[in-house]
Length: 397
Image 1 (tube, rainbow, N blue to C red):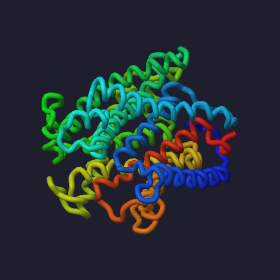
Image 2: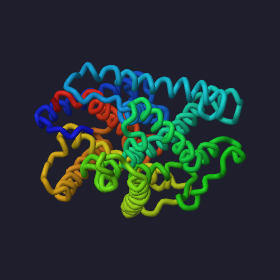
Image 3: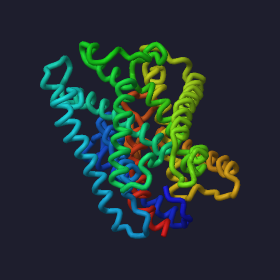
Image 4: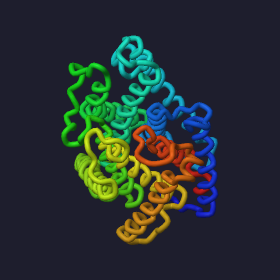
């Protein structure tokens, strides 16, 4: 994200406009009861939101097509491109190419054609949406760590399209392996009978008390929050320590980024789930609602996403609030502001009045089919597109 000086009044106005746009788009596409298209089912809507978030990252940060001028017209082309990428990847690639000619579970129509047990359109679409969600999560995770540690290395100085195709190829290759290990076993276990020859039984079952890959979403989202905070609120520290005079990345920086994301993610997940156990007691296999280990894991991801959204709001609209010369003082103040903003978003979403009214969600907490991730990631994608494609106009000029 750009670090030029912000106009805080314009930032407040732009934030207000973004809130209006946010709820309008949510009502149009996702709201499950009062919406128009009602795509929140919930995995179908969530997979679309996550893929659009990745589409913006792909266009802006991988292929380097971003707008760093005061002209809003220059943001139209990359914005349209990001939407086209969403449509082509989701409906052409996953549903009609990979699902029909490679891996059945990526296409609801291909699943139904097999005549398998319980495969009607809603269930089949949820299965394919979950698989797509996991693939894109793996790509986002790998790409953000690559950007933090490597930057554009080892292709610095080459043309943008060469860097873009090279970086995408590398991250897609690693992300595919990552998906196969952490997510594929969960998807193959969704069907009756379980597809044991296509994927091993979830190897984390005993540790996580569930075969669901929501366990991995928990520590991955928590780790991404740490990476984002270091990049956006601490000017890339400590990754910047391992860059040369040309500011290019390095293998050491990438390993450090990976270690921070994994170790930090697990630590945050452990703390978050310990707090949940304090309020809701220990989870148990077969438990419902807040007692369900799956809910505890995905709720960790939901909380991390709230803080990621808060971080983006503080960074884009309010220029990180505080600009002292001392990096550590800035980090402490910004962490406090982001934490408070994240908790405000949490209480807004789970409020018994505001949440159901504005986000059209089911009242209460602990319903595994009512994840906040869809709304949160959609919000993050909108802010990222505003920042990358329109240079946060008119905040920055």
